Amino acid sequence: MSVSTHRIEHDLLGDLPVPQEAYYGIHTLRALQNFPITGIPISTYPNLVNALASVKEAAALANHELGLLPEHKLKAIVQACEAIRQGVLHDQFVVDVIQGGAGTSTNMNANEVIANLALEYLGC
Image 1 (cartoon, rainbow, N blue to C red):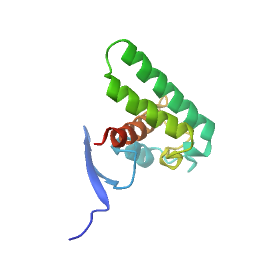
Image 2: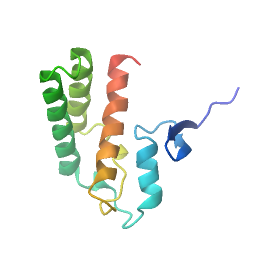
Image 3: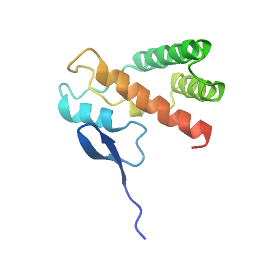
């Protein structure tokens, strides 16, 4: 039996193979394909990655306070954001520091990494 080196993810544009070990997903992969501008990933700037994790944690806390995010999901997201601020998975923040748009690729990269790490904390 062979072990797959990729998982298939789907978005509105179709399917793409994402490396099995990647915490990022299809949106990050598309950004890598569409915006290879400098070859410098955002992980080069750990303070930026840490700031992204802080903003995502604050958003989760606000959504929980509004009753839009259940406690168990909040805890998993907070745990993931804290781990990222401690340097965990910084290598997964791979989009180019210069990209098209208004930072959408950076946000999607952060969302995918945090969500996939949080899913592990939830036992999924």
